[in-house]
Image (cartoon, rainbow, N blue to C red):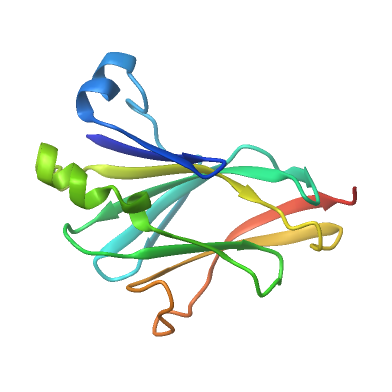
Length: 159
């Protein structure tokens, strides 16, 4: 299985190409800790990893999403913790998919796109178990896919 890695850490984006992945052996053989296999049409969320089940309000949760997609397309991922109206939204692959496919070609059908980033837990999120949700849409403000998928919960502590 090929792995295409896109990474966002504290809003810094970079992509690892196949050569870098081979050299560092990054993500080789890695599979998600939590398997979801949720289909969003041309895109499937294979699974996810959450590096911490407990966080302080105002802190971050390290999230890794594993996607399989029928290339090409432009999609937007939204995530949120708790029932807040505020969401984190970014283009799938952090805007690097088009450049990646132009430079290296279309990945094989069994390739995974792995997004890894730190999701901020708003300081206004209440204490206790809070749901982590994800959705996929075909535009940053699209409402046609206002279906949230629950990924589990994270325990939020007050500051």
